[in-house]
Length: 178
Image (cartoon, rainbow, N blue to C red):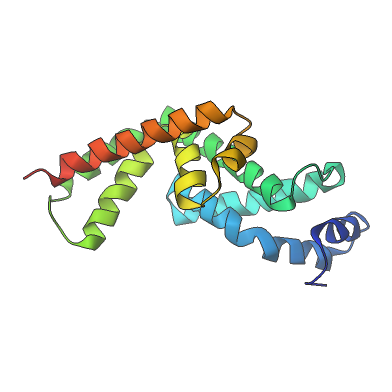
C-alpha cells in the first residue's frame, strides 16, 4: 500500500480504508511538521497543529479535487493553521516577549547561539513574511511553488522574501555588534 500513488490512497480513504489514510499521513507528516515548526517555533504547539492539519485533511478528503498534489494541499492547510496560531499569539502580545529574550542573548557567541538568535529573529517576523521565508528558505520551495501555496502573486513572494531577509539581517546585526 505504501507504494500506491496518493490519488489511489485518497479514493481508498474515501471508501473507509483507514490504513490508506495512515499511509498518506506517514508520507506527508514530515513536510507538515517542518512547515509548522518553522512557522510557530514551539514543538508542542507544532505537534498540536500538525494533528489538526491531518484532522482537517481527513474531514475534507472527499472534496479534494486533485488540482494540486496532496503535499501542496496539506502544506496549505498547515500554513493556514500556523497563521491562525500566530494571529492568536499576536493578540495575546506574546511576540513582545521574544524581543526581551533576544536582548538577553550575548553577542559573538557560539554557532549554537547564532542559531538561537536567528530563531528568535525569525519568530519575530510578521506572519506574511514568515510564511514566505519558511517555504522558500527552510522548506526549499521554488518562488513559483511558494506563490501557488500562499495564493499570492510571484512579485509579492519576491518582495516579502526580500523584506524578511532584510529584517533577519538587521535583527542579527543588533546581536552581533560589539
